[in-house]
Figure (tube, one colour):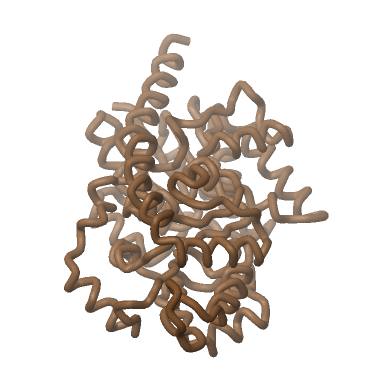
Length: 398
């Protein structure tokens, strides 16, 4: 039975980003091992999968001494487990995992790229991040950007050789469980209870964002656009008082130590009564079920899971013209695509979908079929399994 080691920097990536894949690979005759840094999700992962998660001293930030320690620990783990395939996700796990696997002479070394922080970096930091991506790709035998636009970016900037780069299926790291993300999964009573808990009136129009509340996700622009929207005086041609009838629901947590929000955004988050912060949620489906329009104004992505999830839940969306998002959303079919880092186009798109019931309904009707036809989870898993088995066969014949 071939051995497969999957490594991510933090355990929440194993738990959320790759959920379901490990059981699928076990069912297809792979012995699966998992590794990440410590975290509260490990106990849940082990309980759900029955697979022990090996702890590595991985940290997301750059730290030479810690990274050398992590490299040694990962190398020792690989020598102990003797996997046939090492498959890494997230930048730090990719760098450390691929280097360790290369040093340990693992025959098949795969890395999935789900976004590049260097796309928003400048100066020395950008140069360092580019160098680490090139090292990761050099040590890997296969590199899988999780969108076609991301693959093109990596090739254009010579971050990976053409012979190593490939997109699995139509993109995405894990696809989308269409049966799980179903707009009919919650009855009206459950939606009403959540709205009451969040102080959302039944007639309120709800814009929702899900993700880290950081600058790179476009939160500064989103809050500014929404603040302008709350001053807009008409909603469906009915005179309303300032802010009444419009809500911005933010599901996620800030990361001030990595990417702090602007002082004005922080002030609005504290003082604007029409902005609702729900914090991090294990299950986002009910929050999507009470949403009218999903907004995702990120600066950079690979293939964003939340955009897939919102689409599967039948939501019209507003996304920025970036990798991944612009492959999921088809302009005017299931959403609106706007330039990143700009408040005015975001405000105008939010206003348009808030007022144009016909356009919103059409996008909603198209949303779920467009996701199901291209990104169903089974399609992604089957394609990844084929990649594993093909490489195993090639290696066996060499």
